[in-house]
Every structure is written in structure tokens, then in C-alpha cells.
Image (cartoon, rainbow, N blue to C red):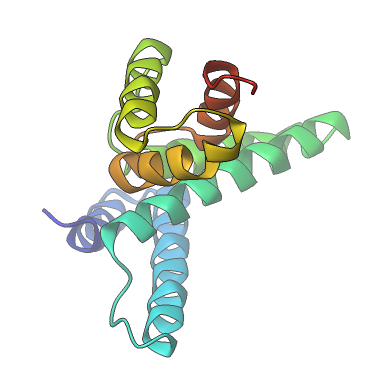
Length: 153
């Protein structure tokens, strides 16, 4: 089932089950996807690709985690909990994330495939990873690992 079809099905299921938080969150995802589609059409590319949607979902999760942290630091635990709930719901649409060992193996393969020899080649390596592992890899962690694994020269 495509991501778009899954969003529609999840909205129906949430409505039937009376899950207001899930319903609101999936509607928010659909609105963001529509915005992404409009952006893609403006660039003459049709609809947003699944990879773009997965990247959008990861961005939405990161935003919610950051908001939850700010709310928690300012004593607004009920709002922090709401943000964490939304992040969990969005996380449910992403494929299984790579663990650190799998990430290291993928980075080693990308370094070998791109012929990266120094930090100057970091962009090539991360670009290759983004193309192959969109939605399955935390690219903030991956970038740090790439820096660690590439020769400093």
C-alpha cells in the first residue's frame, strides 16, 4: 500500500475508533504532503515522491521532538506529551530505522562506491545515503558517522 493510501486509510480508521489525536496528526501529515505536491508541481515534477514524503515525515518528527523538549524545559508537560504522541504517530509511517551497525555498514559501502578519500567527499557520501536510505536513516547521526569514518586528509 502506498504512503498516500495508508494516510487515507489511517484517517478512516481513526475516525471509526474516535482517536482524535491520531486523526488530527494524520490530517496534518496529509496537509504537509499536499504542500509538498504543490511545491513539486511548481518545479514541474508532478507529485512529491515517496522519498520526499519520507524526508518530510522525518522533518515533522524532528520538529515535534524539539518542541516537546522546549515545552518540557518550560514546565508545560501536557504540551510536551502531546508533541511526543504526535511524533510517535508519525514515526509509525516510517520504515524500520537502521541501527548503528547497519548504518556503519551502509556508510562504508557508500564511501567505497563513491571513492571518497577525504572530508571533501562528504557531500557525495551523504547524497548517496539520502538516495538509498530516505526514511530509514537518521541523517544527523549518519553525518556524524561519515565525518568519523572518512580520512581527515
